[in-house]
Length: 506
Image (tube, rainbow, N blue to C red; front, side, top):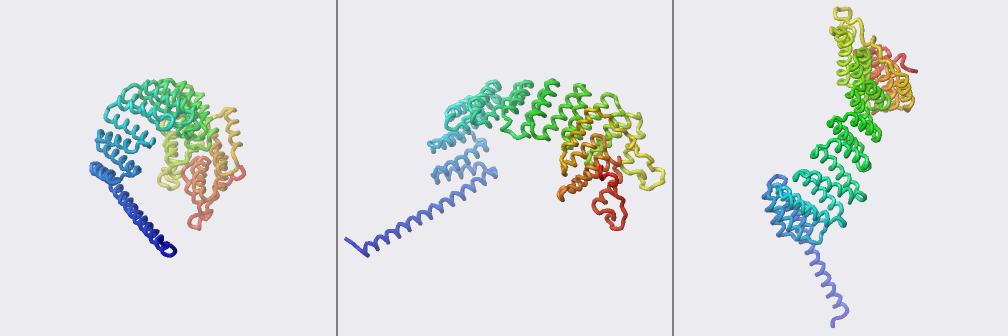
């Protein structure tokens, strides 16, 4: 028997041989893994290039060469999808069946295969078989894989609604998802409820029922969705009621949406829509009050406020109250802060002048003055085209009720003393018909702005505040120059007057 150094030498040789064999085996495995990855990329590239038959052949070769479960699953799914894309649905079904047999202990794989099998059967218009496949999956995986079971039930509902034209049975499947999985899977339950609403709207054509379903969805599952999506559901509810010619119910839904939604932009949108529905129902004073409420409730939502002010003009026009419509149009023009908005508002003012006067005289002169100023189109003073009067300065703002004045004042008082607060105050004053006070607040906003806010603050100060204060669009470029360069102007040699004299301290 060998002992001592001889035995140690033998052990060392054996260990070296084992390590060498292990490293060789690892090297072979690594090389095979690299080959697999390379071939898989090539097959995927063939699919992406829509060379589906080539991709399928490559997948068959790989399935013959690579037997690890993860590889078999990856390649088989690639083959299945290529067969589907190529319209070879029967081949896809056979591949799915072989995949399920290849990895029998993988429950998640089995569920995924069942769902895809149902989908392919549906593509083949084997609707009864697909329905049975979905049903078996829904029942078989309810405890272990509830997400997959619920998805199977949802797909069964879709098949019943759209393919078999049995919407009531489809709705029953959706309701099952809500009942069985609602407590633990609220997102799945919410999706089922959404499909119920859509089915009532598009399949059953039961618009009141659809409206109720959308409202229930937005309320019961409010924690599942973001505010934008919830607003979409409320909007669908209102649309359904409008299309069902249930205007009062639609107005009530819009009002409720404003109440329950949390995001201010969404609340403002529904406040305007509530007024629109009242206006359509000829409830004109109520509609006007609703639009005014938008102005003092959501002063930072400029788009909503412009829409509301535009509708206020329409309420006066609907009553034939042309003078008040002109005053409301002036506010619309005052508050417009973009090139497009100013252009549209100017047209509204011109239309209002026409309605008051019964001719285009003041309307045309107003448009010319706003574009060219007192010197007229030729830009030269004391010529024939001079415009002696800015008619907009003669337009009185509409009278406000005592209650509306209280609301505007309360809204002003509630704003913080910072950049956003001053902006909101500026818009409130402008919409209230107090342009000088509004311009003063926009000046404060400009002073309170940080560098990133300065461009927007300057634009609002000039295009809204100073336009409203001077009742003129012409001449605003000089105020921009003053803001950018000071009293010496861009050339450094001018003596520009301070356009904000009289605003400080308001």
